Image (tube, rainbow, N blue to C red; front, side, top):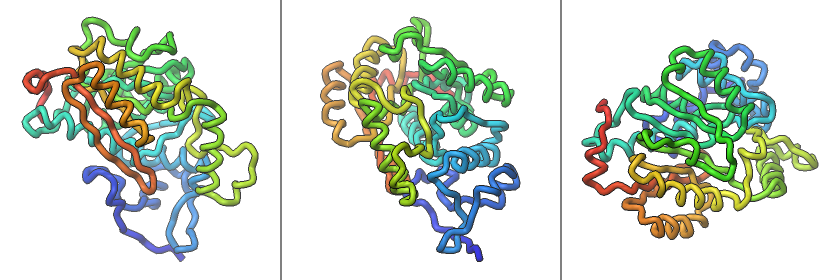
Length: 319
């Protein structure tokens, strides 16, 4: 017997549409494939097996179609499948940040231009940012296959064709170089950096996550992460701190071309080093925005090289 649980996920952003438990009846109506993945747990509540990559992908497909009118969303096998509620939170907190220099109003419309570093094969931040606030995006990635899949998502949703452009980063040691031209003006940049410093570190983390989600998987020697992920999505030399440090140093070269540079930071222990680097490059303003989803905690670090007066002068479209 199934029961309805209307409890809210109070740690998500107040505007997040996914604070309540998933309405599987509605989701299945929009994505019939999801039905085979839904079961009633020991508490009598409908859910999916979050350790199953296919279940997670179909849940995402249903959420994007139901709440954001995104059709035929899909990703290649073994690529990162992002948790929609958490990704939505990043978009909403960015909106709050932009409102601070826009008379308290969240700026909406295509004149708000975001740069998504490492958009992956899922294109999730541009898709959500456009659906929620009608923002425009440039999505970048070093993976040609990932960029090609993002193109498929955009082509399947004509409203995205003018809103999202894609660019492959051809030199993996750079983040903004080759991407930002002298004429570009970005309202913000965003990034979900690789967390791990090696493939071994990533695999060990995968094993822990799968074991926590499904103890029966604990003895598997090569567990499959429910959210997937290619090497470039999960790890890089220097790990998260190395990637973010490189991003900060590069951002200083484009100081006047972007209102806010931002990135997710998974590991709190990295914050001290990040702040020191930001002070070295003379960032005018540094902000840290805490976020959480379930038992996972993270935060956004945002910095600007513009003075308060320059920030307020930045031309943004009002809501």
